[in-house]
Each structure stands twice: as C-alpha cells, then as structure tokens.
Image (cartoon, rainbow, N blue to C red):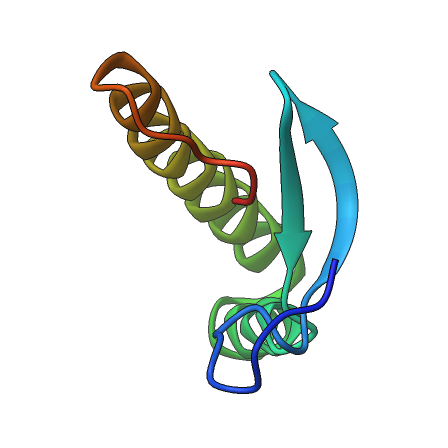
Length: 77
C-alpha cells in the first residue's frame, strides 16, 4: 500500500497484524526507548517503554473498534 507523503505513517514499518488491522511502528518510536533508558536506567526505562507501548496499542485499537462499530474502517494502527 502506498501512503501519501503527508501521512504520519510514511516512515513506519509493519510489525504485525491483529484483528485485521496492520500495526505499524515509526523508527522514531525506538528513540523513546533510548530516552527512557537514559532517563530512568535500564530496567525501569524498558518497563516504562512497555507500559507506554501497551497502553498506546490498547488506545489505538479502541479507535479501530469504534470506527468499525460506526460503519467505518480502520486498517492501520
């Protein structure tokens, strides 16, 4: 699928498909991991990254399910 150049997903790469929605991750997202590790240390930084990742994924799938319930479609997270 081709994305327009103004899409925030332009640099993202797919990592998985869940419930029919492709999950894409920006490479800049891993800069957050490095930032959190640098700020809080190894274990706490990784734990904070995982908590933020899971809560972000749940939030975005809320958008997917809401769109589908109202007749819309959502193919990318």
